[in-house]
Image 1 (tube, rainbow, N blue to C red):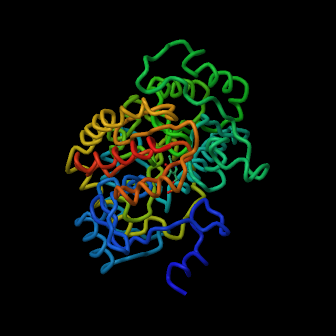
Image 2 (cartoon, rainbow, N blue to C red):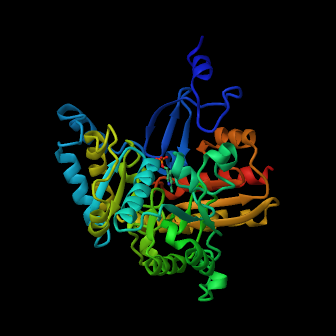
Length: 422
Ligand SMILES: *Cc1c(COP(=O)(O)O)cnc(C)c1O
């Protein structure tokens, strides 16, 4: 059996049926924005490998940090023990966070960091005398991960509610924030979506522990960009009703939207924040759940402890990634990418079958009327040397922030070619 036949016979890929093995590219190396296939062809990774490889693949200082750490202390349990890489990384994160957010719990992946956030919120409410506050609220159109609670908080239509039926806990959903990022804000609660939140809080608030949302960019749930005014209103309502506010910045953190963190656009600080993906520059899996001293005091002993919590290799790489992130104005890079995406993708508006075009920071989204045909996308990707992976009706680019203008033009060209040919 060839390697690829063996692979196809045994290895399960994300969101796929075993009976329908998908066409796969075997990647043998990655450097900068480039992926190298086993037949020697190269493709631009316009997905930043699921949005994590923010500064390009295999930056030398990150690879070096990994090698150095591997020789000294690759892993040690985190209960009762600590190490230098976690201290260094924590210094970076505390400095990067808004004042007040400085209590950090490390875990292995974004989904787990959301589970931890949900546990923090629940334990905090229970311990401050609200034992019945164990429900969660969120907006439609979100995505918070694939573990049970995170999945239940993701959009009930684009998410996985239908596949799991009653096994998924019911959550309180309000409409997707109705006012787009670049539209004028309306103070009218009936129009800006906040009336619905207030009604929910009035009727069920005494059972709600927290409201969770991805600030500004709702990613895998549909790639919608909402107005910062919504987050300000949400903050005020959460304060009024004693509900914790959780921001999931796993996808938006570290300059993706053109701000260091998306929440800065709104000038709002949550009670709990989740980080992941670009935290390690996409080299290792690591996530963080960050809260305030006050909330942490209410939590008491947080009942979570992953085996590989604060793994020294991941922390050392993340620390080097934070040096890299601080060393250059990546947010300005993201804004320059936004300008170029907006100009070069503009012709998509005139193409039949295109419903909407949205750009924000280093994110460009072409929304179609119908799901994109996998075969067509595959063919254009191979021909143009650009790796794109649509999400249902969405053809989008989220390239590494290190991409150069001429390389980005290749990406936008491939996206237009795909949409034109349908
Ligand atoms: C990717 C993502 C997650 C889940 O992270 P994993 O590392 O895949 O578990 C959660 N929330 C958001 C906003 C994400 O983009």
